[in-house]
Length: 85
Figure 1 (cartoon, one colour):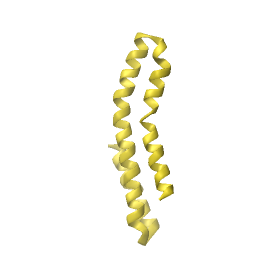
Figure 2 (tube, rainbow, N blue to C red):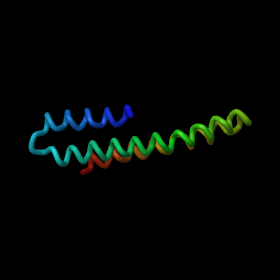
Figure 3 (cartoon, rainbow, N blue to C red):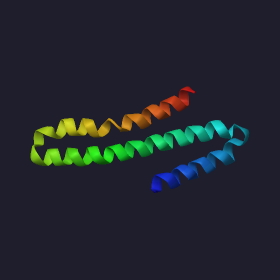
Figure 4 (cartoon, one colour):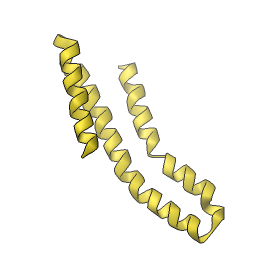
């Protein structure tokens, strides 16, 4: 719920700042916000599974860390696309 409120605040700020360029900026803000929301949902399950695996065997720490970080690359790529477009 906090992510949605943050997204709406960000869109409102862009609306005030950009004026006629609102549609492009709003699309970018919504795209990054939804990418972050999807990454958070995916990371919830992955993180829980990784902690469970690490609790069983400490050798899984490296792979658990890598698998937990992978969804965050979605948000980074969304931000890169904004700057490219």
